[in-house]
Length: 464
Image (cartoon, rainbow, N blue to C red):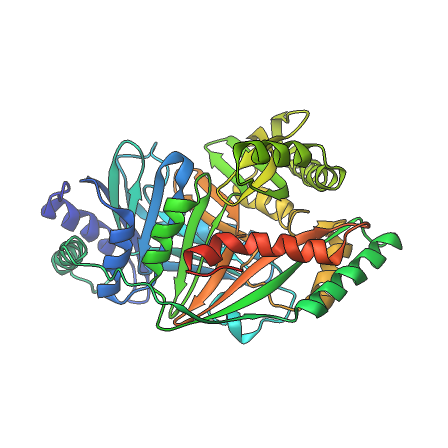
């Protein structure tokens, strides 16, 4: 399985160590090689033997996976988080030694995985103590899997007194441990209890939001709520990932583990994707359930496509994306009308937006302009966010915010973290929201959030 010979790896490590001037200095070394085909969820579960934090990313439509283990380097930013994160990422890359024969393969080389808080200006609760306003990790070991091949990347920060032979042997030992056949636990705990957080108060908040909108203070306000679950035993994240991959096609399946807490979900909503200078964003706003028959399904899709509330909600997002693209891109292409995008439990209105990123800008410029989208915040942004910050009944944490990855070769992809939950051993908090406009009915919006809970609730073994 080891394509890079031990003496070559030792030489790369030795080069990095010799470049250091003092005992306090450190330098990232990243080494990528091709490996045999590997099951990504089994690889994720095998990492429990190493007692290290894990990250998981899958684009199910493209059969693309990233599985990160451990933490070779970390980028954490609080204020000015988009700018600071970009600056720290570029500094890390400028100082790193990266050996990657597969530079044209997205997700190889030095890769950072992570995400951001929805609103860093809202006081953080204990629920999200393990997650920062902007937090990206370069894994110690990374599995990259696409349709053509699998790759393994070792990332290690070396110091002046490190010994290259010992480091190389330790990397080989970790690899052997990860690829040792270990039977994963296939038992899933049962849901012992379920608690909706203040459902009637949430409906009253929807009513308050409609009053704000009718008074001309906003056009749309997105409100989210929380559903708490308690299980008979600790939840095995790899089982949840396997179920999400099996049931949530056309989605991004993700997990970010920080200590005993893991933020996991399956979101259909791409925020932005970058391949060199080619940029793709998508508008996914306007929601309806799937039908129980093909005839009913087609009827619901037709009604969704011609529903004024959903079309208005969708257009809010399209115009916002257009504004972001015009600021940073050329060659912008936006279809004149949306189409229906079907998922297992839901269907959405969908519009893709393609463009070419200007040379002087980065994916972080686009992220900062796009977040929060009107689909998760509202419109206008300032007024809707102020209402959410002051009135919403929960700390969203990373829910509704950008999560994703970027690599050292100008590839990256971020999604909006919806259809998600925070797992904390034997407990889970699930999140769902809906867009409130002037004619919104609180009970109807409540029912819409129930539908949006289903993707996560179903894989956790529950129902509404």
